[in-house]
View 1 (tube, rainbow, N blue to C red):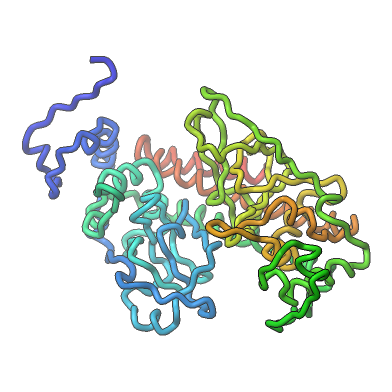
View 2: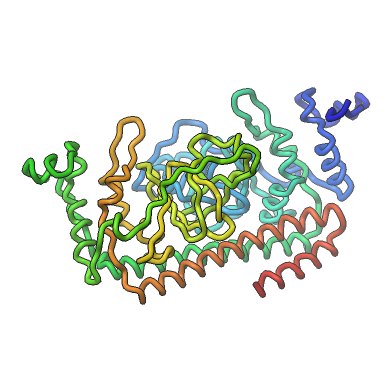
Length: 471
């Protein structure tokens, strides 16, 4: 019958390496069996043959904001890099009590719930770090290079295995004993070194990208006089009725903290002047209704990176999008989270996301007075973040309203400073794009080595990296 797929098996083939006696049809998809056969053709080793495999802490996590020990969880590894934008830390005492789960340089971290199969290799700048039970930790011996293993796991030949071996009803899990049985194509040490170089170069570019963003931020903070600025920590602030509820309509004590007054004074005393958000910025709040059978790029909070970049999106038909997908964005718009707790999730819309749709949890903003790069850095800066936090209200979901947003003072950053910030942000985005491109080359090269041969794959690497250098 049309649309149905059937596979015929000998009992011995059915039982081979099927230790859980899986009988679900998805386990025996033709694509899975095809990929498995290709790996067998080039030769493979099980992860258990060359690596120690464990997972993270099983007990409750002792979180500590003042600690410098990062907590790596299922949302941390992405496609050969770590997203640490959540800034979650574990106490140093808990870290010292859990040496098994403490991460080491060159550990491969694999997500085992959620987006199963995402992975990255631990580098020095991630450490010190520990991990929770939602990741697998793979420690290789010298037979395989960690960056090759992580890249292989991200190819279709790795992804099909991590998904195929995941089990569960409410939530899928990839268990440790299953990670040990994943087959890794046994490609040559020469080819592995080629992949290793690509991934390391991509990581350097990503680090340089973040450094460029930090430079832009420092330039802005220096311009605003934030170098030695320390807001008041005084918990008490006495206001008359006319200075409080009479003018703002707010009765919550948090709203009147002296530190917010300090940030407001800092911005309003800027030498080049300031004006309200309502005057400086254009708020694009017209709702857009997606058409049912047209595919759209949909951006939500989880797609926003630490340096103001959009890290990805969901491709979905209009009829399948959530009801909150109602704001259209265009190149050079800045999207700003309205939700307290994720106010720092701001991003610049680059050309590849022109005409995408974002969640109504964002405000979509641009300006004729401030370039988009400077606008991005402004809204992620300490003074504006604090003034946005001041304006948040609500019960179940605390957020900043349109009226409160429009009251925020925006410094009129001089054009010369704007141009310097623009240069750094553009370079930051360029380096990040190069990093992503190199990781894609590495992934495709591994697939090519399996499907054709290593020589063809190495030629592809050389050709593609030359093109990347010229772009």
